[in-house]
Image (cartoon, rainbow, N blue to C red; front, side, top):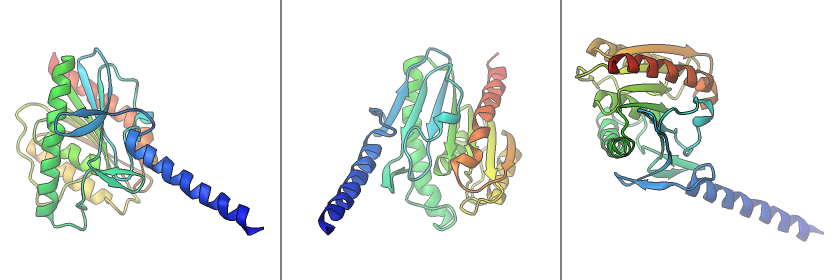
Length: 241
């Protein structure tokens, strides 16, 4: 009598393993393409002048954030993290509050440079004149760096921050940023998000910051991503006139 139960349990485990493998391979079930910098991404064709780059959080894949974003007017590039992690991927093996600031920033800078290669290539391919990045958690950490290095014109940063040892350089052109964070977030506390905001603002970046009730989940900040992106794109367009 026990054998059918054991077989059913075994099939359930096998099925879950296969589902996780498929999620890792495709990122929400769609094929990914290799990008410059050795990254994998889902690329959405678009004819507009604005490129939107999406960076998911750890344990996820392309498709994590897009449900909250408006229909792209131009091309969209949803990149996949570098390292397998849980049911998906992560960008960094370092952790903001656990790894030393020097080691964290060294890894993050290297990854941001690789993302920058993909941004330049895809932007050139579609003739995009402006680029905005949307990032959650580790994707948010990297979005701050992409803005600091002048690799994007705007950024929507959800639950992301940088160590207090990082001082952003003064921007060479206007860069618009919207930062979001959860008041109950223990992974990236709102105080760290707001402190990063303050340093960027002091350096000359245009930054808005919005705290929302919730913890470190995309669901907590998700409803604010679309409006924040629309706001950043509108602010970016002013500088293009």
